[in-house]
Image (tube, helix red, strand yellow):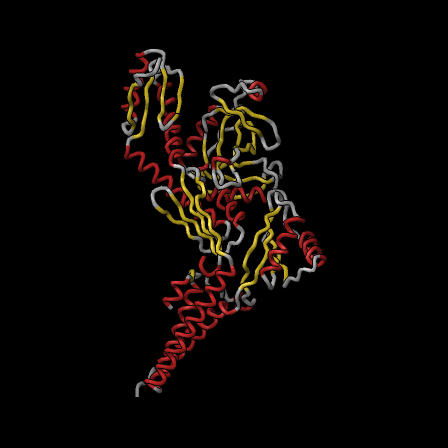
Amino acid sequence: MNRYPLWKNLLVVTVILTAIIYAMPNLFGDDPAVQVSAGRLNNVDLQLVNEIESSLKQAEIPYKGVVLEENRLLIRFSEANEQLEARELIQQKLSSEDYIVALNLAPNTPAWLQSLGAEPMNLGLDLRGGVHFLMEVDMDAVLKQTLESYASDIRILLRDKTIRYTQVNVENGVLTFGFREAADLDAAIDAIDREYNELVVAIDENAERPTVTINLNDTIVRETQNLALQQNITTLRNRINELGVAEPTVQQQGQDRIVVQLPGVQDTAQAKKILGATATLEFRLVDFESDVQDAVNGRVPANSELYYHRDGRPYLLNKRVMLTGEHVINAASTIDGQSGSPAVSVTLDGKGARIFSNITRDNIGNKVETQIIDGEEVSVRRQIPEIISVATIRDQLGKKFQITGLDSTTEARDLALLLRAGALAAPIDIVEERTVGPSLGQENIDQGFASVMIGFALVLVFMIVWYRLFGAVANLALAANLVLIVALLSMLQATLTMPGIAGI
């Protein structure tokens, strides 16, 4: 008779008991819940909790419990219709600009299991419900942004070579430089060819004045578009992960599209806000030589643009961007040591630090503004740039600095989060949108669970009838295997889908 050492038997029992503990959270299910998060200016506090509880009681909407944690309020309900009624009531009571009210599903895992780190496995879109977006990247905008970047670099090149030009335009995927003299045009072509061999430079024969046209070659076009698509995928994934959406799917489809699936998110509008809130940070010098009032009246200087501060004051800013958020490697909310107001501490990469250091060194005494482009629409084209800070350069700045002028610690924290997540490389638009309701997801769960149990029961019966005692032993091993699979999926926080249930 085969005998195993005691330690092996104890090890098997320990593994199975551990697996049972970590598989148990999947038995408790979820509660429909309403989540209230703070907006820019407010916090979620006990006073708000009392107000919401009072409103629910007056409206006779039963709820199971209220939990306040990390500046977020979670209200649990027994039924989905109670959840929807409560959401509508809370939205009417609270200002949508100050608070974010969203539907959620809250796990029912007991506290003692949570203390052991036991959590249910994540459910895919086909089981839990959620939203599906198909997003298209605007590749024409990618080319335009690339050409505008080249335009800025070529301007510097021509100034260094003392080559005079009259106008610069980016239109229909073509960059053009105009000149007064043919000699300047020839010198510009020679300088551009030497510095930028990836560009296709030609003379515009149809122009009234000497004009050179600049295009990207096919290889650079493909590389630029692919890099923009990959950066958008990375940015969206980082953004969703930062905001705590569990197990999202963000992947490429074709040459210019991105699929985004957010399991468990029932509020489509909120999901759009999550995807569209990626911020672009820009630093520009203030044009203090031109008349701002003339610009407000419609006479904007050629090398400047008119923007408004969040307090309504107009500012003329140089078109040339000093620095963008792509050079930010870290950002954290903090408190300004001098004023005691909320601030964001920003750390730049090596290239960004050199650029910022050189520009601030040469412009001590001038004003620099911090501009955040942060819209609530998914299409970045509809985002409205907002000046959040205008400061005078007192000293040469380097790798680390602070952004001040923020309204609250919440805004500072959100801005830091957005900067860490990065900026979209190109505009995106939603071309397809689907919502899988929780009722359909629950139906899939019930059917999947029934199929597993029926299949499992048939196997048990067959093994016992055919193999008797050895079949019963095999059945115990099969049951332990099922528990181990569920426990491992839960411990790894893997995502279970309908194909996964079929595999089990």
